[in-house]
Amino acid sequence: QVQPVESGGGLVQAGGSLRLSCAASRIAFSANHMGWFRQAPGKQRDLVATITSYGVADYADSVKGRFTISRDNAKNMVYLEMNSLKPEDTAVYYCNTVSSRMGWASGRYWGQGTQVTVSS
Image (cartoon, rainbow, N blue to C red; front, side, top):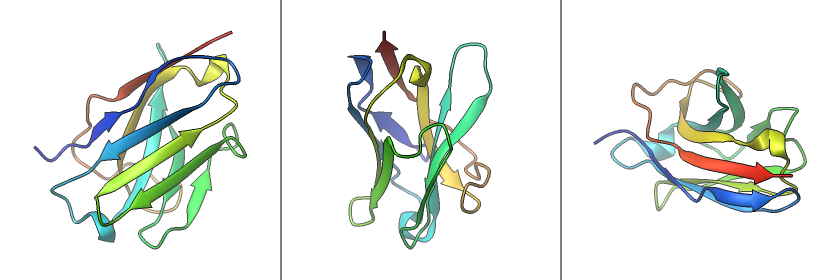
């Protein structure tokens, strides 16, 4: 398998926190920029955050100041720390390689994603 494997989602109350993990093995992980995306029911998949191969992070305006993306190249892992969660953050979250800072998804395969549900 070459698709990423996401985990860490769940049900949380508004204002709560979650930490998502993405295992991206079997790719040249350290050489790739990585991103987190999310897709709410009936909506398109949107980019949430990216982190370059050299560690520069960028965020969508809707999550700036609340979410933190990080990576561990030794473990081929990328993380998304989500704080002050809002009901509008409810979505399935995916990770993938990206073309550039806040660029499009470049990986051929998508994982199953991890469901995040925020109750009001």
